[in-house]
Amino acid sequence: MDISGAKFTDDLGCVTIATLTAPIAPLMSELDTFLESEVDCFEPEVREMVRYTFSHSGKRLRPILVFFGGWGGRGSDDDLVKAAAIVEMVHLATLVHDDILDGATLRHKAPTLVAKYGAHVSVLLGDALFSEALRLSAQYPTTEVCRIVALATRRVCEGEIGQTFRRGDDRLSLESYYRMIELKTAELFRAACRLGAYVGGYGAGFEDAADEYGMHLGTAYQIYDDMTDLVGDEAGIGKTLGTDLASGKFTMPVLFLLERMPSDERNYFVKNCAAMTSAELRRAFADSDALARTGAAFDSEIRASARATAAFEALPSVVPMRLLAMFVRGLMPKV
Image (tube, rainbow, N blue to C red):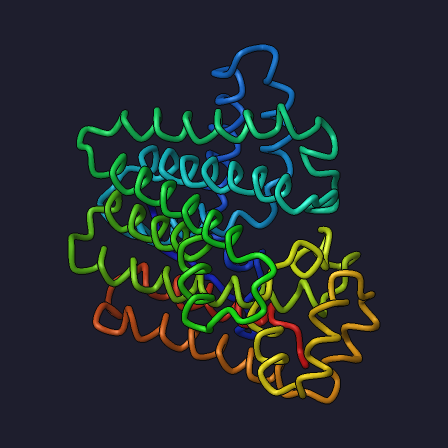
């Protein structure tokens, strides 16, 4: 991997997804090629579904984390690309299953797989993607990649199960909320960063630091996603919003809102929130500090991600990892 002349910001120091990915453009292109070749590994009956899923994968933050985790290391580009593809397949499998559970019809400005093909085949397609990711993991010369991926896959699924059990629980503690999002979202960020550092040959010390960075960044990203589901713009975001409350998920902004509501207002909100419009939800939050407190919790996780790699600032990986955290910070809606 030639990192000479790499520049992750524009001339004004601005961080965008385009500037972040410009130095890794060859790796991202190789990832596209790899995923295209993977379509033919599936049976003919499901190839079109796999191709459709691969073509609507958004920013590909998790593969980017793999590439940044191994940036400038001793690992081969081929091994990094395969690791990135593995993480992306696991992520896409979780999205397929999430959309079934949430009844979402739009993702990345396109119909979800479940909207296009139905729940029965979609859940099986998600299972097939999980399985293919594990098959690829087993191709590395040691079992470490397979261990990281299998553990992350299990924990992501456990996080979804835990959230399913807590649907409709308006007394959910903040501690339980953090535990669920660390499992269902931050876990795969963590695994992506650890995989990159491992395949990049950086050693156990940086693997652990990258792991911690990924956990905090992934937690921040889920807090951002939960905020967006309430106050985001569906046309701009490109996916179905409002699915959390509609499916009985009480996320951080809502928990903060309920915490300081008088009992009669709280009871009314809990009873009616699933059917509230975006305008009604915005009015409910207008006189509350819930969104500001959520933003503060988000910022705390972003800062913690920077501290995680502080001892390794001399490594090439740390600069793009820090800049990616800045990019995620910029995504958070201003309230």
